[in-house]
Image (cartoon, rainbow, N blue to C red; front, side, top):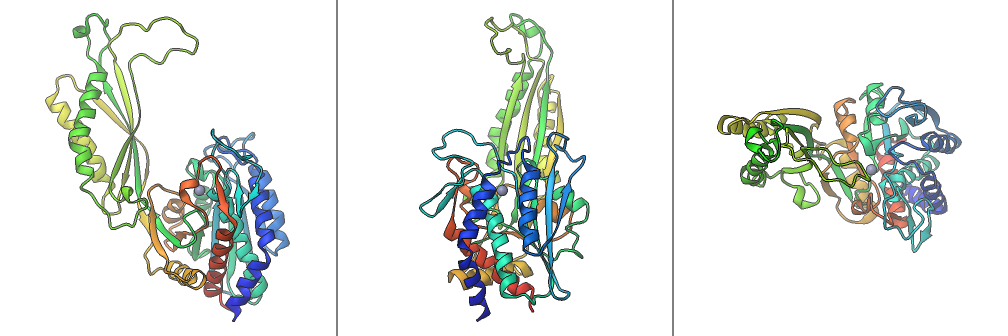
Length: 425
Ligand SMILES: [Zn+2]
């Protein structure tokens, strides 16, 4: 009975959901460099204060990327219920990636056409943020006597690692398990999917060493590019075939990512690229340095030290076998894989709500890349966390990005029924 009342409240707020999404898209929170963060936080603070939330504007002073020109602002809003109980936290990032080419719509216009709202950040993830706000407002209207608390945060810099956003907030204790018990991140995974976590990441830079000499007498030097070529040949011949044998029980989407993957993000060797406008020829030199950056994504079944040992093993073999081979390897970035248990309270509750609203079973997925769950898990030590939100992941970061109004309304219903279950009267 009261589930129907909650759903009616959401249906009645359809225009408000559309207007809110449009307003959020029209604030161009581009990252990098991190524009208009304060503006979007002020907008949300006014909106949520009017709905009875206590709001805090939090600047991640000193975090990577924070400066007087581009301060890293975050918003945290909290609404206490009528008595003690759990806290359900909705976390959305408010930053969006660059526009890029190929748009046929105004990327910051928030145009509504055929049931879709267009713009940069529409699906990733201002649509999800708007849906969570409408869900909370509808739930509070339908169940004013709820116990516990609702939090909504809009955080900076997810697109550049989250260090001025969720990581900073977790370091300050805002995601401590005694403060927050359930976290839902409304990333665009689709309204019938629950994202349990993500694969792990290891980025490393490898440099091969050489000795510079005149290009007409390469035998007087030692080419770092040839040494790197030997490493790349070894990676092709042994490491790539080995990685395809590693499969995971994690339900990663798309399916191609259900195994270990490796990308070589970049390669640089020898003479630097000429300055723009330089019209002369390059100089003949033997390359004394060559560098690559590896992007290895690993599975919950793998340990990061084993992942690293696969690469250092190849390098050591080359050092033993190849005259003059010398290298350096440097870790750049690492994130452990994470996957919330399917029987965790937030997972079970959202799954039941999906079934009620959509009449079908929830699909469980894992993201190929990481998102802010990594900080909530590792720094915040909170395991009861998922990503759930409207929108089609493939549209994220694309031209003519959009989010469907029906999808937002349906996922708002799922979020509101989740609140009703976790925050009973
Ligand atoms: Zn996102």
